[in-house]
Amino acid sequence: MTNTDHIRRLLLQIGDGLNALRNRCQDADDEGSFAEANKAVAWAQRELDAIDPEALGEAYDLKALYDRVHLVVVHLRCLRVQLEKCEEAAEAALDAAKRITHTLEESDSADADL
Image (cartoon, rainbow, N blue to C red; front, top):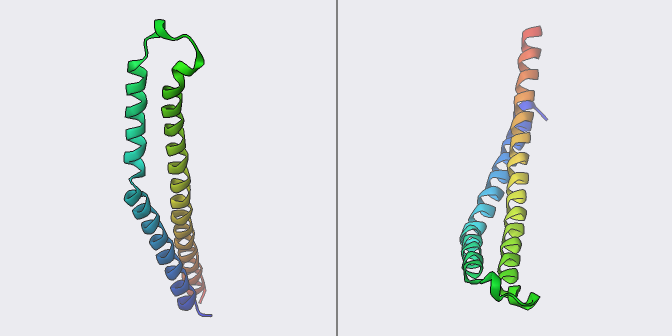
């Protein structure tokens, strides 16, 4: 395989990584993940504002707040997974770009030796 073929293959890998990243970001945007997490935080704040500390008598009195905060945690976990997958795709593209740079530097070094 010539350096040009190797570079073409790496460029295709970068394109694949960027496409995967674009698709993951689009999926997250379509699902409204950030917006849903923000809504969950707002609902948890409303539940908190509605609580009268003097009226709390048992754990059940905090159930609605607990459930809302738990939902926030779930949304954040989903976002973290989506972001990790996006990061993996971006890192794969970056790695391929580094390999192209290394290949070009080796080629320049070999040409200089001639």
